[in-house]
Image 1 (spheres, rainbow over the protein chains, first blue to last red):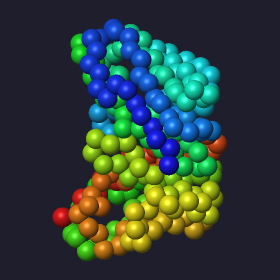
Image 2 (cartoon, rainbow over the protein chains, first blue to last red):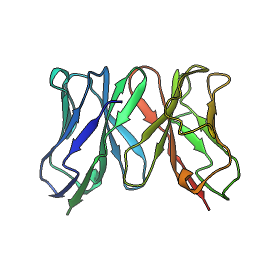
Image 3 (cartoon, chains in turn blue, orange):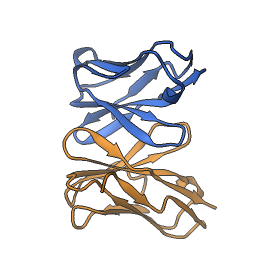
Image 4 (cartoon, each protein chain N blue to C red):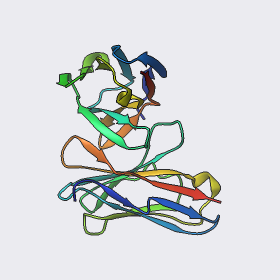
Length: 107
Length: 111
């Protein structure tokens, strides 16, 4: 299967700071999505972004499919952004998840 | 419904018992996925369906695991003769086209 690597594994931010999370993948994919797992365990879909750039409020994402990576930007972080961020890449109906970036935003 | 629902939310069972986990996808969603997530890990693919047809079951760990979606809507994941190593969060997701939406999961504990 496709290997998905996310970095950094852990991140601690002061409220209001910005951050960039990275996802590298090992093969061509036709689907890429970012998820936020909140402290209650719910997985929330943030972006469907197989290529290009999208923005949603303080979050934005960019995928460069030809170079096999995606970036998730969080600006002006808030304590509610805490949790684990997963990148999932899709190929032939299967989605492969990375091990995530655990983000803690402190007030 | 408004989102993907799963039942039960928590299940504690004794080793050797069979369990059935239910997933009710978002109405009209064609694809349905089952994942398993261990603590501190990302979700691991088990199987997926388009309508009632099981497209890929390569992620099912062994033949104690099976899944069905007989009418192309609700799906059941069955684990026979449960073992302690089966303890995990079992997540269901559905999608219409590209974006997949997850349910709240079933936390299975095998004692």
